[in-house]
Length: 227
Image (cartoon, rainbow, N blue to C red):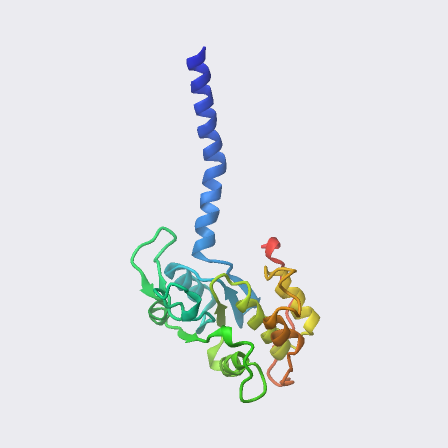
């Protein structure tokens, strides 16, 4: 009886592991491959976190991306061993040969642009946060679209630059931009004017009032939990 009970327990544990573990592993692989990849405005702007090399290649192919904008900084890695301004990407979630992001993007025939988003609290020569002056140079050139914006997690710096794009190029209000930022994982407690980035990037944001080339206002994006 004890042997039968032990066998039954082992079989039950295996069954649970298969039922729960396989879908979880499948989800995790998909997550790492295309980390928080989502549409901002279809045909123009997309956002994500740091994907694998295959993930970037697939995104560039799927959305016909012309530009990949990396908002990370080499200072983000405290060890000093990794240059996140041009990070080494594993081929897949399981590893494989690592290649620089700029090389992966170039091989996929898209342009690679790196802007240090940690400078959001620095005022640029035109009176805007320094980061926005640089981002506007990318967004103002129609030859760069469609554009993928990404940082490490695809939540905070990506969310702020997406908010700037919404307000500047699509005429969204501060409250609309802030609502989308929170819905896409920035965090309720972090998204207040006590945060220097929220303060500079949204609450004190000054729109240049560019109206000539704004695309039609898209439908309201789905929140993170709806994707």
